[in-house]
Structure formats: structure tokens, C-alpha cells
Length: 413
Image (cartoon, rainbow, N blue to C red; front, side, top):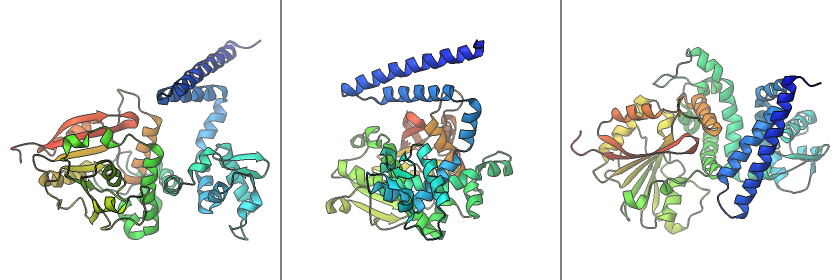
């Protein structure tokens, strides 16, 4: 006879399986009707995950979670040896020795066999017959060079920083200082140089990959474009200037330039010239309206009175003291008609549920930058430090994203 606990567990599994079936039918109906199946798919994924947890023995689930770093390490090996690229080149299964032929004569087959099977166990690729490996839809995503660099960044830099996170936290008494300090990134890379400076000054190839990775992040996660959240024609003249502060390779500006054919865009970052390649391949006319200038946002803003100043995923990387300086320089450059758009993240705190994706990004930020997402109360306190600015509109979106429209107050210095 089954114990009461066992019977309860069995009943729960049946109930969850029934719920999964119901949600699967709802998702199929939404897909057939041509509607947006995002909500139905999210509910189905949540139910499937709950069923998987319930079916799996607690000790097995705990060990699987604790050893998850091995999957990232295995994927890093396959990316760095171009095995993933070779898998993407054919739809047919490929024998393990064939995948290794260009790795080197001294390569140990057991290492790669373990790496391939670890990734197959996580459904990142398939092993249809023993010793033969095949791409699947998740592998195929890595054929895109920008997405590949984003994932490679996560399993290389991200994994290294995450492995030092607990030690970093303990060394700082579990306090994240509101000033520059040695983050887990500094411990992982044995440097006192901040992350972005390290990438651009000390390790340019890694910096190049990081730049590509940011494009890959936006392509892979497909967040709602900021222009679909805040209508640009309402905040910027038809032929106005948009300053993309810390805009990197300019993927936001290039996308916006395609949509608004008379607006002009200035991308400010480490480089004063356009990148040699971009995930958006604009025509020459588009490039004429987007230009790059080298600028450090801790210095005085050289472009005065622009229609829009865009800070996309910038302030999250900096503590309040540094963020205040960035905002003060922008406030000095703005006039009464200027708009500052801040696209960032917020910590939902204890009053609402966060998303797994948002929480993962938050931990990644703490490890790599030594900063945490701000609560909405902390965002309010930050803007209070720059009283000449006022938040006119604030949109809190999924996965902890927040978009703020900010203006300069009249008569306030």
C-alpha cells in the first residue's frame, strides 16, 4: 500500500499532467487563431517545469541544479573549438571523431565526448545514435554570430564571474558599496580595472566579442523596442537629433534611423567611427544620418539641446554617485524641449514576483559590475539627487524592465 505522502504525490502528478494538457490545448488554439500566444506559452512552460520538478526525486534535482555550471563549461569548450559551428553546417548526425579532426592531435576524445553529451543532456544538441551528434533548433541559434558571441560571453566571462560571486560577497560582508570597488569580475580576471575599461584597453578581442554579444542579446531576447513604448514623434522633432549615450555599436540608433527617416543620430561610446559590421546592415543613406563620436559620459556632454538623449542599459552598471554624475552632465546639456529616455531594470523587491530571467540578469550584473538593480524607491531617490530633472512618465515592463521619460524642470538649477 502506498503511504499517504506517496498517494498525495501521485495525485499531484496527475493533476499537473491534466493542467499541462489543458494549457497545451489553449496554446494550440491561440496559435491556430493567429493571435499572440506569448501568455499561453509562458503558462504552459511554467506548468511543465512544475511537473518536471514534482516527478524528479528531490536529491536528483538538487544535484542537477548544483552541477549546472558543467553545462556552461561544456558549451564553452564546444564554442571555443568551433565544434558548434561544424555541427551547424550540416543537418546530418556527425561522428564524434569527425568533429574533433581540426581540434588538434593531442585532444583527448573523452573530454569532448563528455562535453558533447553534457550539452545533449541539456537538449542543446542531439545524440540520435551513440557517438553521433546532430544540431537541433537550439544549436541552430548559435549559427548567428551575434547570438553565438552572446552565449559565448555568458559561458566564458559570465561563468568565471559567477564562480567568484560568493567569495566577492563574503569579502565585502555581503554589502554592495555605492562606489567603485573590486567586483567578482575583478577577482575572476585578477584586475582592478573596471569591466568596460578592461575590455577596451586591456583585452580588445574580448571587448569586440562583448560588443557583438550586446547585439546578440537584443536579437535573442527581442525586447519591445523603446520606440514602441515611448512614441518618438511625440518627444523629438521630425528632423531632430537623438544622442545615444554609451550606445556601443549603435544597434538602437541604426534601428531607429530606419523607422524615422528624417531624424539624425549620434552614437557616443569608446569609438569615434562606425563598427565594421552590424546585425543591422543599413544602406549608405542610413549611415549618413548616424555618426559615432568618442565620448566618456563622465565628462561634459558636448551635444547641447538635442531632441532626445537615450540612456539604454547604462545606469544599471553604475552606483548612485557615478549615475548622478552622468545625469548631471545630461541635465546641463538639455534644454526645455529635450527629453531623456532611460531604458533600464528595476528590482521588484518583496511586494511583487520577479521573473527568473530578470533575476538571472540581476545576479549577472552584481557579479560582473558590482551593482544591483535599483528598486523603484531607489530610482526615485537617484533622480532626487538631480533636482533639475523630473520623471514625467514611468513604464514598468516584464522581466524587471523599466522605461522612464525625463524632462528638465523650468527655473531649477
